[in-house]
Image 1: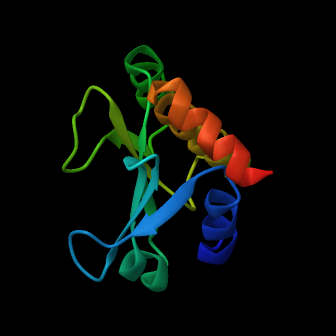
Image 2 (image 1 turned 180 degrees about the vertical axis):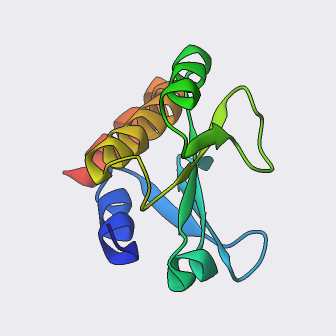
Length: 123
């Protein structure tokens, strides 16, 4: 996966916006003003990309045991976030699934009203 594929995939989801709230390097993707993914642009350019993704705590623990490249979230809640080293033992397909999982967790946490507004905008 390259940064363009990652970026386009995330932006194709309902209500996703991109921000640089911390610095010019850290891309934060949000749905309904809540983060679901963070990544470093510089690390993509260096060929060592990683993603911070929200994850169900039980699933997060299981994934960390199963994959060397999935670790507790860097600078995030270690219970609810994972850092995934791309270009490693985690396939692109699995990374897209984990992006979906993170997005879904955040989307479902939004109010019904906010969800409906995003669905209307997507149509």
